[in-house]
Image (cartoon, rainbow over all chains, first blue to last red; front, side):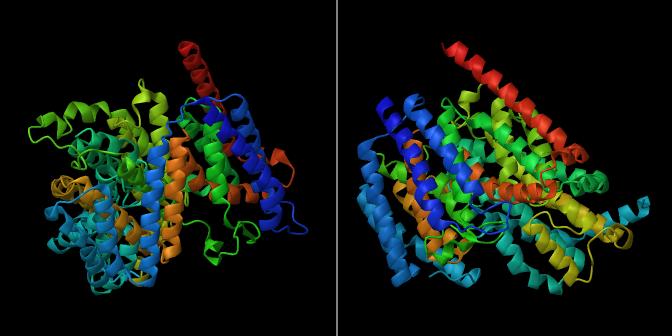
Length: 138
Length: 502
């Protein structure tokens, strides 16, 4: 997987360049009459990132245990949880969290009713936090 | 100096049924909240302070100390069993604890964490009791220049975690430092990399980044790993040999140097205010890996990895009390809360505390030692209960762990923005490990980055272009020398490893 290594090295070098030319000037203010600017450390970081990325693109080393199918499934689970978090903000933890757990269980392939009922566990978490520890959830 | 009678009276005050009861209550509470990601002992101590009004000063402080110490053990339990650190301090414990649990030895891993945690904690308590005044003077010499040099030394030690690819290690560290620069810059308080999001003014939430990078990314990886049949989260053989469920004396004794090193690192870093437990545990882990004869076994369930991190992060707690009791300077948030409780009870911490309240202080020391014993025995019982939890199938454990991460991060950060950051860093953590970048190096650089930049800015202002000023800072020079020696030794080690590979 040396080509993937080269690609990530090039991407890091490009990210460093982008940081230096676009992001830092746009997102970090310059302060007048100051020896140490807020951009000093980010600039140094960008330079090191660029040099290390370029070095890695030219002389790639190390393993890249990347699995495309697994990565796609990770994206699927992230999308499910991301949607769940959005719904928690809209509807509330106590209603959405059990549904989120149940969805993940079903996507994992769990079909046993004796196991699926445990999707109600977040209600217990909510009750402990809400009533026992008095720490409200959304 | 105090007479033996004062010390004996103070220790005697600690050993009363009421104090013992509240220490036990505190330890149980601490272990419970420590095991729930996001709550942690600090929040619980803050919530418990009002309840100490009704108690005597010693009982109230003993209760808070119990919570704090219990939290140290509690945080490690979910880190080992479900790879979800209860507190950021326990993130390093998951590195070897969880792989060892996955090998079917969760009780062994958790017991090693408990034993080394209690040992490290007891060591730092003994240091606190015996040599706190001179150590506090050393801690007082740690100005910004010394802190920068200490962090350079820490980075040199941690460089030992860089694997085969030096470039990848540097890139991981640089990304960590970059993420640490998000928020208000430490010198001028001007915003950096905010992208119009007011939530980022305080920087990226540490809890979200740590749990996202280390725990959630691994949970997503395991969710995505295709399996034909859903199994238990951790393979538990009912006929498991006894040696897989316990830590033998030989194994514990074999870790004595690891535990001692971790305890010393934790005590030294804990005595210097503001460095934190997480840095201590990662530094101890890195130095243990470097000095090990089998460094390749780290991250795969090496018991020394657990001993190194737990002894170090627990040793910080006692050491945090050194500047607090001797100088009135809190070494951490939990120490600041204890100062608050002392003040509420009309006691002013500081240099005169040992003269004016000697009996109370020795009572507190007695309560701390008592809390260590309680931590040990209650921890042993608690581990058995947790072992039942992880016998559940992974279709129960992983979704529940995700919901716990969400609830915990929400509680720690107070907004769902923190949860969104958690998901972003879970994705980033997965991408980094898939491409062979170390998430551990990223996290260490992230934790230390802010402090490093602040101290660097302060140091450069102090030095003001005249580097001969450094000659007035012998501690800083010694630390720089140590950092140079470590870097040289590591490069020689890397060179010889490359030579043997070829």
